[in-house]
Image 1 (cartoon, rainbow, N blue to C red):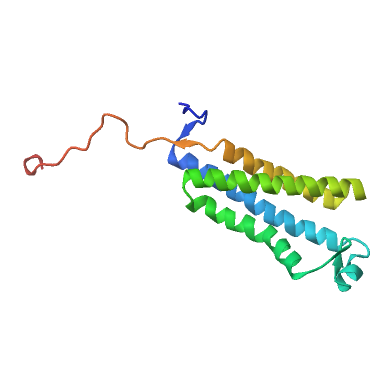
Image 2 (image 1 turned 60 degrees about the vertical axis):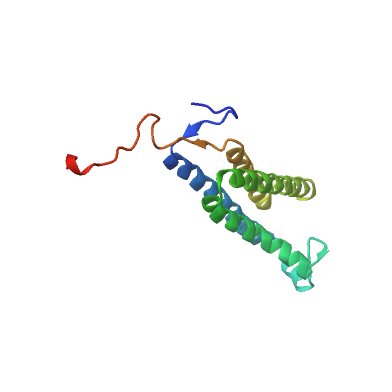
Length: 163
């Protein structure tokens, strides 16, 4: 059965599976960020640049470090929140943050492609772009949960004489 919004109805167990898939995608973003940073640090000359307090021709500030930390904190927090937020809040949070992450990863992907060509860094960015697009798609297609109790079946009170 399809609801008026075009989303299919599923049983609660299938909704749990949907949420687990979303959690995995969010964790994949955090892991991808770890791999991305590792590959950046492995590039020739980057350690000297880091020791001078710079990365990719930008000065490293406390604000920048907080911004970088959010690339781990937000996905890991969302992996948990997917399981505790209500359906509407889940759809909005996943769609909104998924779009923001997708735009940032595409921006970074284009910048690295133009400046450096294809590399391991490019591969991590492509993987994180795909994961964030998967999050947006899952939020867009968020299923509606079926009622557990079929219509017409009412609970019958147990009288003392029937036992």
